[in-house]
Image 1: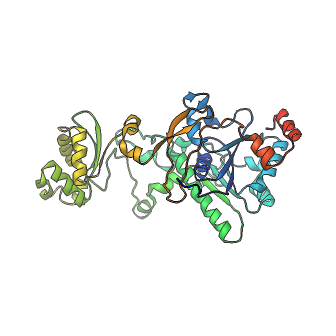
Image 2: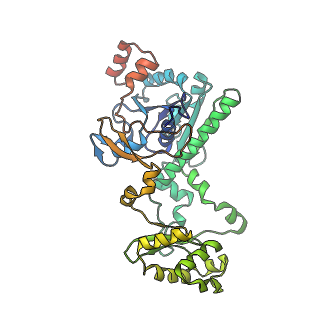
Image 3: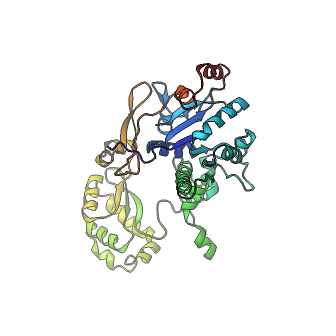
Length: 398
């Protein structure tokens, strides 16, 4: 693995907790940015209290806090705010996901920070953005997916709307935040050195990926819940196998459909007017899925996967995490790696994506302890005297 890092030389200040903005910090830290995570001295990031704990470390915080230099600083008091301002001149980026207006209340809003460091890029991730009639509403991932319209189309038509599993809106917001930061960094470094603000609402990444605006705007189409099917392509469904596994098959295009019926040894289906074209198959998907489901129910998962792979039929077993741990492709791609906790114990954690050939990302450590980088940042980067440092610590500022 190469020694060079894609974001080497960048310094990022991270304020906030849980996922939206901190996930952006995680991605940047994996690719070499020096991410200084600022946490409340008493409680730290809320993510430290989620999930199972091993050797005193939260396994939820393990993947959000990896590679970060964690410092403590009480930003609710003027002395803590003043100390942050002493760090700002050394930073390229500041990430935050506090409630809108909080930084202004602390005299740490963008006009004030950019006065101190005109090159600084400040990225805000909040539930509903920094402006708009709902800016003061509280939000979590589940609120964001509902507001964005994702829940309305998730689930089966005869059941209530269902939230997508996992914190999808949170992580999409983190990804879009990262994209915005990289755009702003390029502009700053290529066009005269000016920083800027980035404003991202938690629901906006999810909304951006739903792709419903054009058809509703033009034709008034309101997509409905369709379960596991795709209203434009069939067959595309989840089926149960003979050995009680679940498999997804997506053979909706004409070429993949021909490959599927070849595996089924039912090529005559290709001449049936109900199933001959992509449009006709979509119009008759219920009948088609029953037919395919009955055939799949007569075969075991391994047999099916081998046949589908041989003929190029897009398909996958529906994996549990236990299946993933045993899968050779995940291993070959290094999607699961080992990294050390503060105790020295190594745990399994998610690998870095995407894969860069010259400057790949890496995970050096996970779940850093609260305040573990205090001395490095305050005594080293800021050059505080030992007496100043101890005074801040004794007063509970850090």
